[in-house]
Length: 202
Image (cartoon, rainbow, N blue to C red; front, side, top):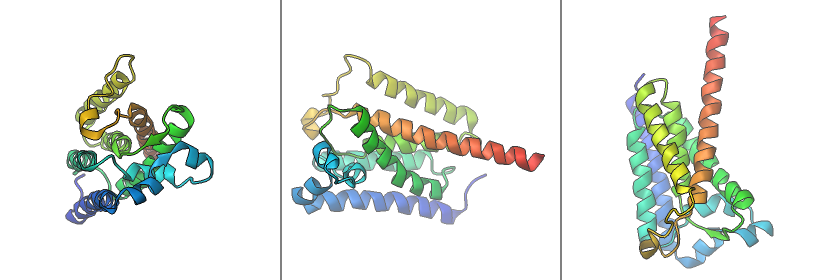
């Protein structure tokens, strides 16, 4: 079922708010960024907010606008079917999943900035939540996304393809962590819907 226009407005508003946050942090300068970025040593010393806030910092203007464009694109893809409440919840929870994934499983990553991992997670979650409305289309899109994530983890994948633009390798570990977080949330909600459907039919 298509969403009412007010729900579309909320979805767009959430995406716009996140993009504005990107820009505010970037334009505030390196002082604020250094206090918010994912820093492994600082996190282990108690600055646990960096698990979340690191996702909203970037390596310069190009990196900021690239992730803003990615967020805008996934919002457009999921515009008709992604509930705004789930979009907001995902934007809060998935970045934490990215931070925890890096902290626990990507021990060679000392510093991380960027929303790309969260973008992958939001896209994975949104595609799963849209499956009941467009099963074939969104199942195919999810499989393509999964294929890209797997490809990025293969030995020999070029993580330096954006080094000239952002100055650092692409953090494919964050992409994986975000994808897994979004997939987990999406699957939980699909299971909940199925159980509720069974309960109502009994």
